[in-house]
Image (cartoon, rainbow over all chains, first blue to last red; front, side, top):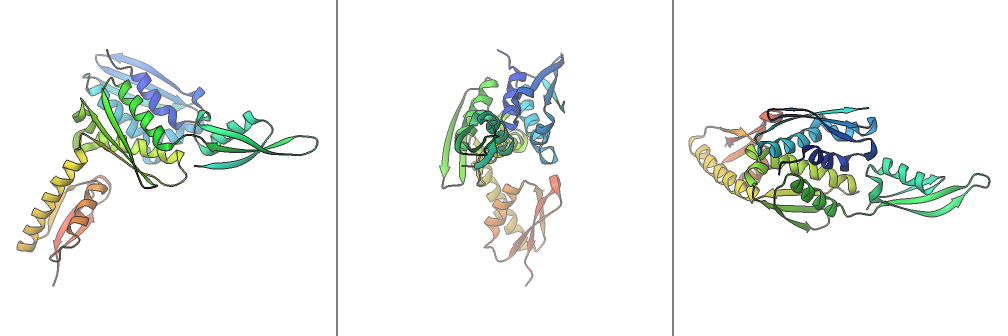
Length: 82
Length: 202
């Protein structure tokens, strides 16, 4: 069974936000093992999700890459706020 | 545990506000009414506190993460003293989770540390190890440090080591602290920060 990246990433981001209802993680595109995932969070939560010098965003990306590399896939994550 | 006191009109409002103030999801907060005030407009005095154990939150998040990756895992959680939590992880996919030069492992640790410290009012030291990577790495680094230091002591020529993270540099600094014929110093910035072993001047 292949990994559900939307769920993986959503579960990683959820503990960081105070407005979980505004959190959406969607697959933007997928072709030939290249995935693009779009994370949308409330403006208030953007700072927490990105972190100082983007370190939290980076950690989330690294974890997602590791999981994707197991299936020979590449993943791009975009983070934006409403 | 973090506790804050708020003045609000309803318990729901208190929960919402507490979530923003404490920066944790509403589901992890307990709100209790401790007093009332006002004559015309009733104002509630509520106490909000985080009702979950930070170490448990970390454990749940880690197991959920590996579950989402379809990786079978065993996680051992251990508390050392008041302020240290360590997770020892073993999976069928250790190399992927450790990553190149332990980069993925470092990021997992950073992520979990960040969450745990959001839930705790005292700073917690959070350590994550996968498949004994850190213990092995420690041994390797100590061997490298001793070998290089012997060379430096003999030749009196400083040796520059490869860039390492703070934790790895610290291992060498500590290991060589008692050596009288060499000094250790970290040089460079950011990703390039590395250790230099210098002969001591006499």
